[in-house]
Image (cartoon, rainbow, N blue to C red; front, side, top):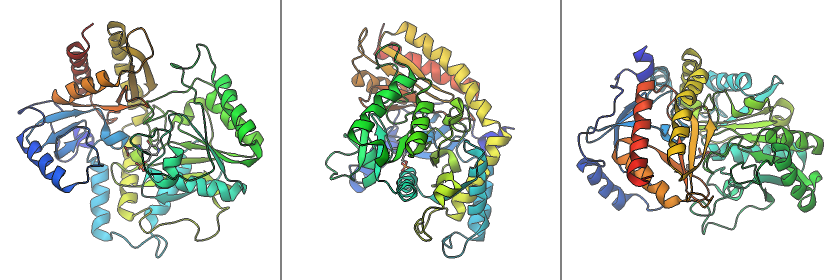
Length: 451
Ligand code: PLZ
């Protein structure tokens, strides 16, 4: 069992610091990094990685850190997951690339068959594969426009959909994602999200959807909308979980308007939220679903899956790319899907919620700077504010994140105001390691936000 969880190297699943963090070798590599790598590429934790497996990351100084980031929700099956490693090794030795559009191979088709089975809804589905989440989202817009003959795309406050030109337009936050990078793609319309912590108390999901769609009707016109694009739980925007009823109301608005309901499940997909997909929680069936991140255990792969007739609206040759659905990445995805089933990672995500959520609520009870605790499954967060207000406290958030890092726990921040600490552990993390990470979080709060 340990083998399946942590890989051939079977890295000890412990936190162990042998130097300060970052240690001398990491600091030296950071120096080389600064000289050679463009300054625009950020660093969350300035430690360089040597190995990683299960729920730990070993740095070049020999420190073993607890991973509560999973490479931004990517290594849900664990780092270097054995099924993924085996599948990749076998495929990379057989052939590395032919281009699926030139001479196809079975792995690509098998991944599309799995996507048809796993994504929400029982209707006939088809998929196309790409390299990144942004590319999948771009293609969702392309397909929606051709299928509907309309151009407007509706997106939400706090949304994150990528860094390409079109997906920057779809993304809400200016700094750092859009700042100075315009002009942006046209025909993108932004409306308010359902954000229970910041909405008027008691605003239901249906009311929040009506608030948003009233703006669309008056400012865009329902008949001009190709797609309503939404993250069922927002990722970079701060793990904003819409009020119950919001997503179903959007989906039914789309049905009535003849627009497509597009779920961006790039961050929420593949067991992360305690379901195969976050839309499953309320039984919402999107017309199109974008996936990436957790799909292939760390190899770059993304999918766009949708109603067969919608996907097939595009003319032959209209979708593709040199590397999309690379055979090695497809093999990795098949290994990852096998792991998700074998280890019941849907159940694992729910168990992680069961351990973490009560601890985060306890933390909130002790620290008035924690304004909100939210999320689902293994996608959980706390939003930090000035006590007694909803005023975001990004500075405290940064200090607590750094205090975790220096104690050997990788945590990420998020949110429009940078005031959300988010937790995305690999779903194979053991309960002891998770408990220890939460102890460290308590310590970090005690040090930085004395009650
Ligand atoms: N849609 C919902 O979360 C990627 C971005 C990290 P790519 N989120 C992590 C960063 O700072 O660049 C994301 C997402 C949702 C789309 C994307 C884009 O996926 O694979 O990064 O292109």
